[in-house]
Image (cartoon, rainbow, N blue to C red; front, top):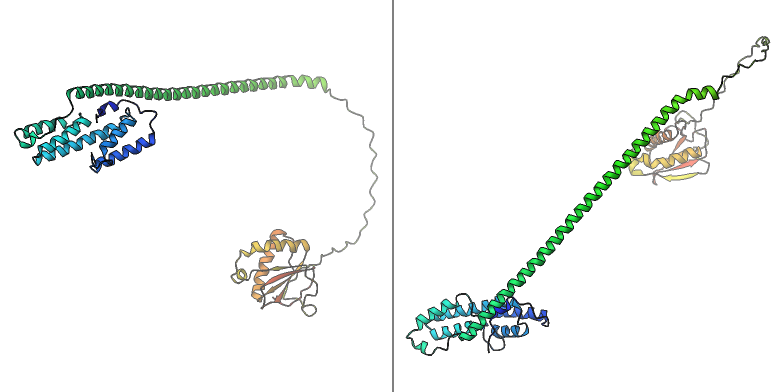
Length: 372
């Protein structure tokens, strides 16, 4: 099979009719074959056959070039090993394959000269196969290589031109954007200066008008508001002498009855049980009461509002009188913050079985229970 010289593929574009994915897969397989030294064997599964297939599918795809050089280098390496073992005929066979597939493989000519010198007069040299391609084939390969190199340079130049054009377009765009931004800033600055100038003119005009108005005001007042003549008043009758004062005994001041219940100095009424129905009932947090947590004040605010709004008396159903006294202080402070004039009326009910709570009752003026 005549092998087309690989360098011709370097500068030519990919055949538009070849399947890109299939070619990519084929390149990967060729590379794997070379790495595994499946160069020309076994039949149907080697790099050389796949190289021929790739070049038949895409004769102008230069991506195959590096792999063909690797292929040629592998055969040059095999030829050098054969020469080291004095197998000159085998070495020449490897070199012939390299010449046909990749005649410009680096080191190929040197390996050929070495094998020529070592094989002179040896028996293996007499059985050697013909060396490399013919002169006509080599000339054709070199011509194709030269054309490929020229085409590659043309494509590289074209790519550079496109890249430079894209770079220039980007620079022009950035330059235009900068110019637009600067023009916008100038326009904005001119607009601001014009506005400031206009405002200054208006301020000066207003100041001038105000000054002129002040100058004109005295004349205007003298004309429009003449001084009125004094009005003659009727003679004022002389007041009659006041009658002699009558002494009246001063009426004693009425003292408002205090409704504050100071437990401990009043006598309980009835049997010490609240008889009126509760207006409302509120649970109290035992943990805060036991820990004397002053944060309970936030919990008591809505209750204090209800006490004040209903002018209610309260009964504290607490576990101990100590809890009752502490709660009374907290409630007193709470109600006074809301209404300084309000006085709390409170009583205690021993409650050792349930959670503490508070009940609101209609206003009363006497204590239900004894001391605190």
